[in-house]
Image (cartoon, rainbow, N blue to C red; front, side, top):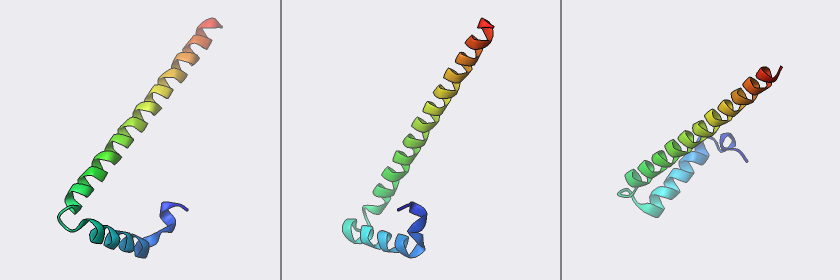
Length: 67
């Protein structure tokens, strides 16, 4: 099941359940924590991709210098 298949009604239900479980005072804290988590995940993913690109460039340069 992908996130795209949830749809708007599903998201509304999830938000209502979160509101009931945690209350309105905790929502900003939860939102902030989720935002920070997603930002860290994005940063880590970009770092991994950049490192992979550097490795590929190094391998290409080595193979060209051998020829």
